[in-house]
Length: 176
Image (tube, rainbow, N blue to C red; front, side, top):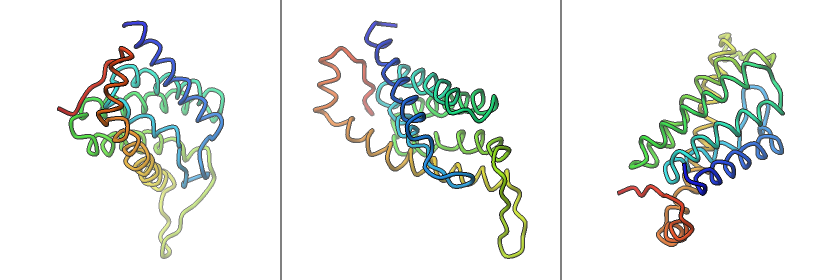
């Protein structure tokens, strides 16, 4: 890796960790938005520095905002998978952002329900907490990644930003 790629990795790791620590998640239990996940779509533009950055940042952030070992380990793995999917599907940015949200929803939702006591009752049907959490986390991650993250990605993918990044020696991946 080049020095600027290492620097970019550190910047994204720091940004992600700070957003997790400062903001945590908006909401609690089955309804929550992790604002830091808006950085994951930038893997489509900057590649491996973002993948490594949001993965390391998740590890650090989850270690500080401690819910348990499961969150530190599996949340970090979920970010790694999500950012890699975004990078691999980068030529179709909205699809990449959407597809990248699913591993987070499924992986994080599969264990996060253990940390919150709640029960969902819809029309007299008892919905399992793990199923509710998986659906809820997937929807909230879709909002953050396909909404906020995609908007940031589209903005930074404009030719003026691309030229600036290239002039700084930062490798960028264009949609073409």
